[in-house]
Image (cartoon, rainbow, N blue to C red; front, side, top):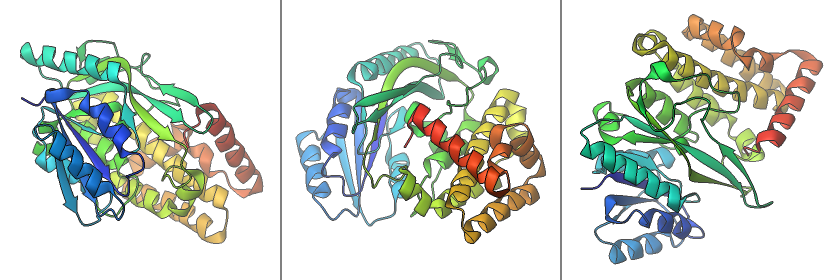
Length: 340
């Protein structure tokens, strides 16, 4: 039996994918690794095939036309046979000790006949250029080492939110609810999280620094300049989440779930508003105004919650002074948390 499926979407990843895959191989026969070669033009295909040949009972490879990160995730979900499902980007890696702890808990819970819909682990920003780290943990949010419901979830700090890096979902949750991401679109990990969490009922927090999130390449999608140039992609993803977010349905599951997803949406709205403000040209200001107007029209209740009960309202202050405050706020938060 495979207890976990790792899906590794790869596009021209030859320079760094081996570190990622080698870290996953430490799970041994308890895992399967699906490497999705998304139309690469370098040696990604060759490297992936070599792993599949060397580890035929663990590694599977898909070679496909380029469809973007979401396309690779979709393939992984469709073909996963593991009890749990974890996305690992090809420039990231997993900590070996934390991985063994996670596998031990998964196997123990399974042997006892219990069900967990999502495991949450810590993740680490690995700033390779200056050799520093920033750990995102959830010690204040979740009771440790227990299967819990949303009722036991406490408040998140401003620097904490659930990301693809921190989540391991039960594979059946993804398959049964037809979780599918848009192709040729960046930042779809937010859709993955926000569309799946409403189907999660039982959670387990393992206080271990599992996921190592590489930060340092200038061409990364999260770098400031790249993100600025792709703000349309972020707006697209945010609008998809807004259009599909049923606040009442989330509230019916538990108020804590509804509160978290609303907060996640608020973070996405704030990010859009901040980057459009920093860009500052007439087109950007119109996009910002249109974005908030659309949110108000599509979901008035969500608009009120995001705009007036979270920090997001502070990211839409008009005028030069507003731009100054928003830019300074971004610079301070980036220095504190170093998330790009």
